[in-house]
Length: 500
Ligand SMILES: O=c1[nH]c(=O)c2nc[nH]c2[nH]1
Ligand SMILES: [Zn+2]
Image (tube, rainbow, N blue to C red; front, side, top):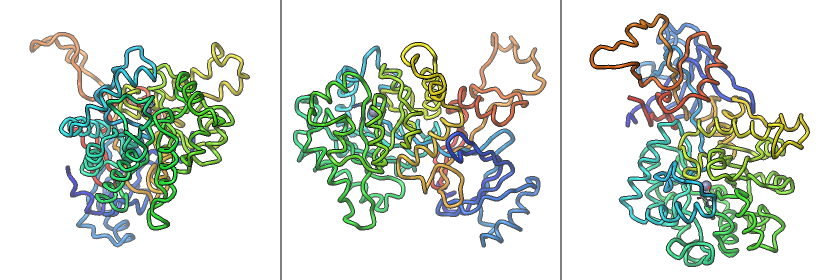
């Protein structure tokens, strides 16, 4: 789609909003962001005279950047629209996408057996995998997800297809072939038969991504031991060795890793019983060489303080998955404690433990779940007042997690997450519906033409009346917005999604 744009230098004009640090959004109005043909932001300049913008652009910016003013693509945010960094989903299971919303009253371990393993194993079928993965990518892009860390299945070819589809659609992605070789925990119909098989299939998936995107410019492989109970010690240790040895000191850094940790009480008991020699759940991964600066730990709901400090020392990050943690009754993750300990935190939709592919929904739920931890009743009633109230995450904070936080966790902090010079243009154009100033009420409620009552528009769920501050508009977007507000989406400068 419209891939011609990324071959040209581009200028984006209007209002830009991004997170500069946890809790602080920066609002930049009447700005010009210049993006070169490689998708990199090369200038961010005030552009006061939007009326004569093309003249200004030609006279000042093009001269300054030595750009040809006649070979330029210009995108202007309309009144009330704003550019926001693309969302980063640090934890999503593409093969579970058809199950979004289907979880009943299950909890993690029975949910895996009842819904998840049957669906994942069925994606051995390439046509089915293509249908599911293409729709998952389309849907996440429509929600403004410019980067996704995907778990695929244990099948090599369908996993490679997911990588191909991400590359073709232009979505930045980490694609992980899932390792699960424990013969007691995993069902006979869906498992790796041995550690050898898990490693060989993993290498095949890594090699495929290396073949289609040698520099991992858009798509990267990611080692994916499903979670400790699914994997043998041998499998985890060999993945740990592969993590560190990859590239052999060459051009490619150590491989990223993703897995689940401390999601649910029954899982904690299982890990304790299976790995009695380890001090903790986090220690299981650490002993097998899996905790590093590019390790993404999903959930981390029930980590102890000692585990949090170990995770922080290793530089590993957490994918906070509030929709999933509420849907599967897993618990409320201690996000403030993680952040205070210096652990990087991003947001994960965790489809389909999570019911929604939207990172905005995850941001909203992260705020609400943090409020639960701050309530002076129930589980945390004994936490001292000040500390308990500190648990609350603001709109600014959850938007930080959705962008820069996720970038940091995935090792992309120097490439995406904001509108700084030197970062790549991964962005969404957000538009909120402006309510007409003097609506003709008679007309709006017209009962003619066979219509009865009110009529819906496709403007979205957020009504802006025009008197809101920008801070208030952003809050209304976080709590009421959806994919109808995502008008355009770019990755590395390329337009990858457009509404209507
Ligand atoms: O939320 C989760 N989704 C999964 O697919 C999974 N596998 C192990 N643990 C898991 N948790
Ligand atoms: Zn998960």
